[in-house]
Amino acid sequence: MRHRRIESIVDAVGGTPLVRLTCLADEAPGVAIYLKLEYANPGGSVKDRPALQMLKDAIADGRLTPDKTLIDATSGNTGVALSLYGAALGQRIALVMPPNVTKARKDIIAAFGTELIFSDPMEGSDGAIRHVRDLVAKDPDKYFYSDQYSNPSNPKAHYLGTGREILEQVGDRITHFVTGLGTSGTMMGTTRRLHEHDRPVRCIAIQPSEAMHGLEGLKHMASSLVPAIYDASVPDAHMTVETEDGWDMADRIAAEQGLHIGHSAGANIFGALEVAKEVSKNVGSGCVVTVACDRGDRYFAPMRWEARYEW
Image 1 (cartoon, rainbow, N blue to C red):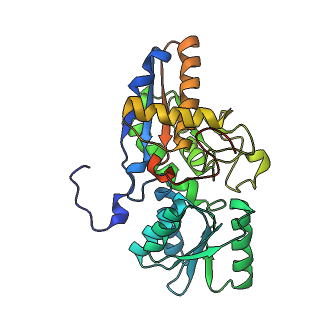
Image 2: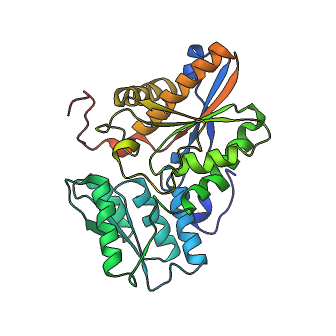
């Protein structure tokens, strides 16, 4: 894999490494915690997988044609990924986002030739979704709305890729899978694949504990537009994580493991550690896998949520 030759950047998606978090070993004796480094994808995040899958599937079945522009609502990693792979596949991309997203993200997305359309800054990501829907309703012949929150290609990417790769990397050792809910594609697709394994794998979904939180990319489902691809019955259990715990864990993993991860990844690891502690206490051994959604350098620019945990 390391020395493979590829014909296009799209062929570099997936095959991400799985690293053991040895710095947490003493807190959950007998339980191995592994982190899948999704920031090793070309676009730098787990969103490379669904973005590419949505593009490829729509082109293959004729929903996305050369005369149409793919449009979606995103201010983050999905936007980067759609822009990158749209450019690689020769497809026009337009993204709707609030204008108050970081300049770095707008610059990265624009560098690929993507059209930026700004929604109401006071309505956040849900406002961007509503704005996209309005644009598509007014001009359906111009746009293909990929709709990452409703598109079955989103969880499909993780069913075909993430889940399969985890089983290839740890096999029968895996006992638990933990990840956060945003669009929910990672949890839905990976869990469905892991549940098909011949040995039981318990899958736990994470979300922020409060509606006003600082874990970018994660959704507090009770106060958000719930993604159509989300099915609360798919995970075996649900848990919540405080913003402080996600931020503190991200800092710790950088300092103790040399992995500079984003805050949603910090929340994933915090949840994985809590699960590992319970397994260690009640069972004595196990293997917990979670996901590093992206790198911490995507969050250097100032945001509303500061490290002091004050709004």
